[in-house]
Length: 570
Image (tube, rainbow, N blue to C red):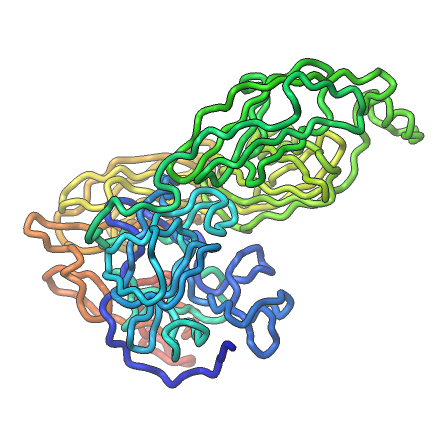
């Protein structure tokens, strides 16, 4: 049985914890510390006394769900599926969770690291010793490894009395537990989703073999259709087509293609698809499969025909049953209210967002659009027998702020969801020499606003400005200052919207200074030089430092105001 008495603090003696992916690409924190499912996020920190989520005290949970200081990690370019997952630490595997593609690794000093949502290598099992950088799997594709439809890696740290089995006290990645040279302190109970949207780079390096087979090492075989029989006729409204096929080895999802792409199903985890009511005509259908390694080819085509009598058409039935004088034009089904839930309340452009629907009609086709019924199409889904559906959509280029996802069913179901787009900043490459050039990409700022790009802090030297396009995006090539090495930051600040985004950059000199070997006590990466060291206490004198700097949640420095509540130098 799990136990949750807080253990006495333990001095850490483990080595550095690194990100569970290889160096060479930008990743970002897509979910940060201190979130709640009641607020649209997925991480619980279960209160063992109430059996409910700590923040909301409304969402029921299991006592072992201790994820207060967890991170969800994704690649900036969206190409995380299939990427190698490397051990973040040296240790011993305490347990394996095949359903969620995860494991807990005992560090041997009263701490354990866990990760989830990977296709694990074959043969990995509890009790094995692993080395930092050892390949443990690949990032699961959409819907694999319990990832909810969006590929990512979940990372967490526990203090533990049983090697990370059921004794789990969440610990932030700070102080002795800094993550790959970064410091991620807890910022207080009032702030949600801490360190969200932070862009990071890894210094983890593969050790050993890179060809260890995983569950999705190759693209799946092409699935074979099983029903209905080729040439089937559907002449009764009560018998809409149900297309079925055999499962394909190694497949995680399937998609049906009608009439050479005239219409496609959403990606499905089951081996069947109810098409819903179709217009009269002949149809040709094929199915394909995919996993993290790629897609199969399309199956051999099958055909069926829909030939409903006029009196059996769905339009005629709705007209006969609709006595309302305000009914829509003939042939348009009456609208009714359904439900929609979004997996996140705040996203960045390019995010793959899971969208769930309920209270639609069985087999109803639902089309999703951005901001209005006639807005940009972003996805579609088919309701199951219970009237529910789930799919993942990609957030399009859009200005920062509130937006809507509109769901409209072909049988009248209507549901909307709200989501906020936050600013983001990408850069290429992620490692550069002093004086080198970096390509910066902006998204989610205000439309047609000026964005300043500052070096190391908002008050630091300007690397240039960008005037965004109507979608709040833009780009600029900038030259990195010739001084300094290690992990540095570029801050993008919108002049009109106040939108702010931060990107980290590793600056390495020709002799290698600025790499992982330059991590010093405390977790900061610094090159040789003279530095001014300051500290911060948030909440003193209006949340500002003595120099007038407004304290930010992700400040990497702090300043103790040289004043009291009644006496200040300004």
